[in-house]
Image 1 (cartoon, rainbow, N blue to C red):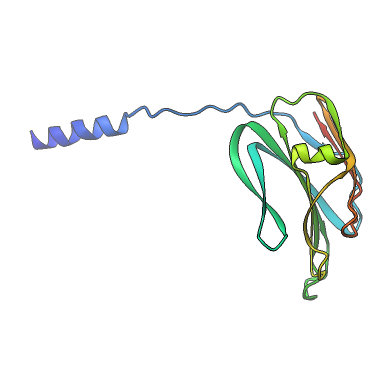
Image 2: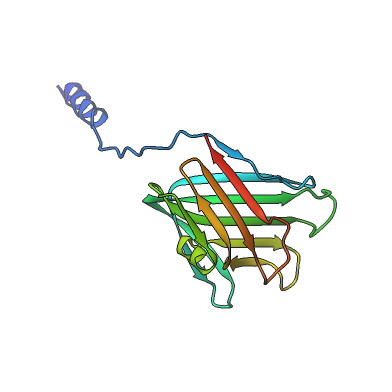
Length: 169
């Protein structure tokens, strides 16, 4: 009888039908159409169901955190410059990150309005006083159902990447 009770309790535990959340993911293929500089590697990521929160660390430097959100997605473009492995402090990376709505509408966003999508440019290197994240306030972002184009300028620091073109197939 004791074995029967244990087996019955185990059956209830393993047959528990916990609720599961279903999230539709866009099955489109991402193609980076803009040229990547020969001396580096470029990568594009679409982080589905995420939103950005832009924060200040108290010293004037910006950073962002990603949070779950079923209404938004985050687009992240990264350029990593290839460097010799034996060189210290020679790493160099640029990053563009912004958020758009999952059900985005076709639109063009310009200049100061780029902050409506929380667009940041990041420059990460051993470049004293010229590294970190910066708000993008000059440029044009054009979003269509199958393409994202971005041309932008940053006045605070030099940069390599000037435009990004992504096709969603």
